[in-house]
Image (cartoon, rainbow, N blue to C red; front, side):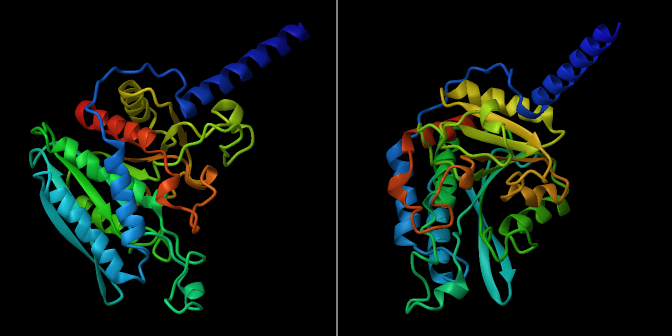
Amino acid sequence: MVSRAILAATLIVTACIIGMLCLVMQPFVARESFHPPSVDPQRLATHVKRLSVDFYPRSYDRFRNLEQAAQYIQDEFASTGAEVEVQPVAVEEAKYRNIIAHFGPKTGPLLIIGAHYDSYGDVNAGARFAKGYSLRTHTPGADDNASGIAGLIELAHLLGKSPQRRPIELVAYTLEEPPHFRTKNMGSAWHARSVRKAGQNVQMMLSLEMIGYFSDRPDSQAYPLPGMASLYSDRGDFIALVGKFGDFGATRRIKALMSGATDLPVYSINAPPLVQGIDFSDHLSYWNENLPAMMITDTAFFRNASYHAGGDTWNKLDYPRMAKVVEAVYAVTQKY
C-alpha cells in the first residue's frame, strides 16, 4: 500500500511538473505553415551600419545623433507608402520623438510592433573624455537595438507592398535606455499611454529587442535560472518569444506562426517578471497600461557578451538569421 501511495504521489507530481513546463515553454506547438516574402540580409546590414556607425552614439545625451537616427527611420518609413506620424516625447526641456508608421484601415483590432532606436551611454563616465564619450562609455548599439530598428524598417517595406486587412502600427521608440528605462519617460510609455487613452482595441504589441546575434557554439547561451539550458538549448541559435505568465494562448498562436514561416528555431517562455529579463524592454510599458504585449529577442546579455559595451558592432551580427526573424514577424502580421 505504501509503495502504491508513493507511486501515485510521484505520478501526480510528475504530471504537475510536465503540465507546468507545457504552460511555461509551449513545447508542443504545431507549426502553421506560411511562406513569407524574403528579406534581404544586406539591406538589414546597411541599416544597422548606418545607425551604429554614422549616427554613433545614439544615447539620450547625444541629441543631434538621435535626431539624425529618427529622421533616417522616418524617411525609410515614408518610402514604403505608409502614413507616418511623429509623436513628441518631451523630457526635461528636450523634445525627443517616436516615429510611427500606420498601415491598413483605421479601425479594427490593432497590432503594434515596436523597437527602440536609442543606444546605451554612461554619461558620467563619458565626461572624462574630450568628446564626452568613448567606446568604453557609449556602445555602438548594433544588436541593441539597431537590429530591432533594421527589422522594423524592412518589415515596413514588406507591409507597404500590398494593402493590409487590419490596422498595424510600427513604432520606433526613443529613450528606452537608462536613465529613462522603466520610467514614464520611455518613448514606449508615451505611446502606450496614448493608445490606452484613445481607447484603441490593441490585439497585441510585439517588442523587437535585439534580434541579430546568434551562435552555434556549445554553451554560448546562458539563462536566468539554473537548469534552463537542458530544457531549451545551450547554443544561441534560436529566437525567443517572451510573454507574461498567463498569456499562454497568445504565445502558442504567435509561436506557431513564427515557427511555420522559416526554419529558425523559436523558443518561448511565459513567466512572471521576477525572472530576470522577462520585462526588460518596451513591452513593459504596455503591460503597465494593461495592454497585451510580448518580446521577440535573441536574449540580449544572456547570449551577447558585448551587451552595453563597445564591442556591440555591426559586423558581429548574423544577418541571414536576422532576416528570418523579420520574415517570421511578417507572418504574424498576416495571420494573427
